[in-house]
Image 1 (cartoon, rainbow over the protein chains, first blue to last red):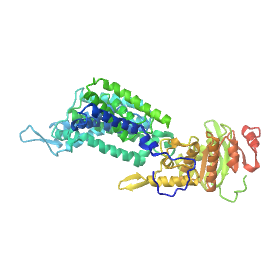
Image 2: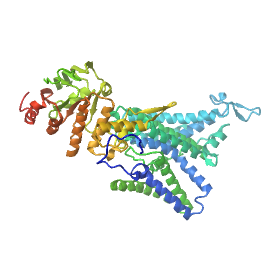
Image 3: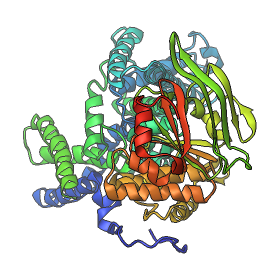
Image 4: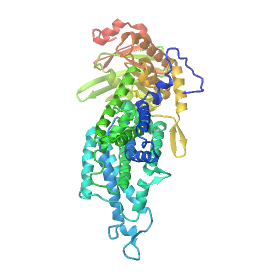
Length: 360
Length: 254
């Protein structure tokens, strides 16, 4: 770091870390990014189709479908916690969103008269204010995510339950609720705002998939929050030494509640986006996605022991998983190998980091 | 009683402080004074009441009896943060540092410097690094503000923990076993740091088991035994042998 100030200290015994020994170059994220670049090169030679615009768009779209949730979970992981309920949360938010959207768009349903009326032909449903139903239904989906996040945070931060057990319970509770509210059937986004819903979730903007754009915006916001606000500083401090954080007067309870809320909101938003792409929110949607999300975060360098992680790592982890899946398909390898390979990569990434920190 | 400081006003004054936990009397009738720029060693065996006393002063517990005056005013702390607000800082034995953060980040943890941009407040990294460097300079510790704490030596970690107390301009710094788990060379550094604090008029209470350290830096030693103060002597008037016999109870009081 170049500092222009007059140094009041002379460093005779303490050397300065070289640029390649600090920051991203010395992190697991850096190594995995390097591996990812190598993988791109190999794939480019292995398959002429890999680097085409169509395939890249496909890859961008597919990894964006888990990356937003991964950003949220990364917050939780940095504090040394874990959130296993993200898969269920995706489904529940998606389901609530499409049910509210459909409900408000059906004349005769309670409250629907405020939002829609029938056109002169007696069949076509017309929105009173275009976009309002969309807004309210998305807010409803995020609202249930907020509640689930608050409950997670309350149990973990205030009651002191273990994050693993709490969110494992929540995984089951929320998945159960998905089946209860839908009676086991899926729900579909419908009504006059459904088209704009599809456009916003699975459309293209400037040739790029919309979810990818959301991801980039959220990742930049996350980087700023983590490294340039005191909240971000406290998130890292909590993961590094929770007792120290407490002793310096940081409100540990509040920061913990906030990260679980962020985790749940990110998962909820992710679920809503996925349902736009699927065109429905089935009750078994995103089952076991929590494993992909956590795997991506860990591959990207988030440390489950807490204190390390970031948006770049989360995205790199997601891209790596998707490129491998995509590559295996292009290479016409039996796609059932994918899961096995993902497991190998999780262990390899952590192993390389361990070897590196032993050598340093 | 110490006479050399009798003219000045004590920064900390305890009168008849006692503490009961249920039926257990942990502390009884402790009177003591600490003056600005004075280093007081607090010694005693395990269970002698040292840590209870420190925790009362730091606001972790409330005393059952007696009065605490700080800077001339009677004080009553409900939480540690209240004690910190008036200028009492504790450097904990395990230092309470976040290993994954830089030295500057640790110094400013919980009281970050910020710059406002509209409704948002962002960390002012440069100001924090500059102030941290200044503090390390005052402490004459070769510590870089941007280095991660996990890569630091024990002495540097102490410097970071002590720099944190300097940030708030604490008037009393209590150090819990600062030399317990570090190397000989680093002990020298830490004792040097205590001297720096003393030079700046800060009162230091050193809680330690290590007789040589207490005799190297302290002006005065207070010996606790079975919850009572058994001795309060200037270092020049006592000897390690006498303190040892006071701690063990071979000598009742002095």
